[in-house]
Length: 471
View 1 (spheres, one colour):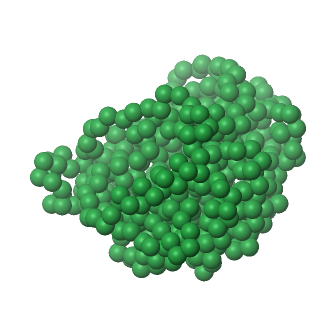
View 2: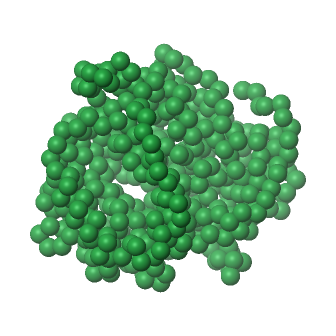
């Protein structure tokens, strides 16, 4: 695979950066290195510095920021390199976005094998976070569909990684949050589809027990499942939900006016949040009102829904993160084992309700078996993703309490969403951490790839290093 002939070296500038949660932004040195030569030159010329790769900035916390080193922008490297139209195997650079893959291949009858709730992430970011979607219970996470990738390591070496070549590095990079090196390009197995639509069975549940039972009982029947959950309901209604169960729609299930271009997404106008909302807009009363309205307006129905509306409902609202105001928000994604998920989630929601810090959006999904990634997030159980407007020490204390509930019930948080988990809690949540550190130490003995998150969690160096410098 030939690199572009442009030898342009890095250009750099200072920008205020944060994750998608706009949580504690600060100045960071952003480096634009458009090709392999520029990346290698950056590593060799700036030997005392440290780096983290960054794609489109959609991880929620501090996993793609580095306030004392540099942030390597990966979006300029976004070429498609090869595509097998018979098998659906796509090879592309790591800066290609999921949106670009959809735009180029969906109308040909190929779609992503699994997808998170936004298509505005890069292939490199999807591998680093080992992203997952509404079909994890049956098909697993993004890493299951990655056949190989090339990785630029700290010494400037390019390594070919797959399940048969550099296996340990391959597995450490899946879910490794960019700490093993820079993903240059990758091959991903796309999945064939007949249409760009999902046949959705929308159902309401009365409480958490009924929600979990519905998801468990339908795992074998539906490829996709997700529940919007009212995390502020109490008593016998605690955990009431709108459950959406779906399968890929066939052509003959579509309205007649959609059948001719069945693999093309309908065009619709989006809108943008023009400014940061005042803090008072999201308060316990407005959040409770939204939750009640959503539950009562989404009744039982069978629907044909296009991929954008089903997989990416928030992508139609540009800068939706501004709704939470300038202090930003913390997204907290909890995973419980199947055996303890009902007890754990019930306790979690009781604590959230008592705190008065309800989540504007709460999404519950089933998860399937774990994959080989040392720091990959999921195992068989259930996940609950919550958005908390950041309210300083109140939110810090709430999330610390939720961490303890997770530990009590054998759960863990998702690193792509995390902004606050402590080093001590993290080390208990991820039993393969030592194995990951061994691979990283062999690849990167000087800890040149590190982030604000990895320092906070003690994966790299002193956990107080970046916080102390920023103070």
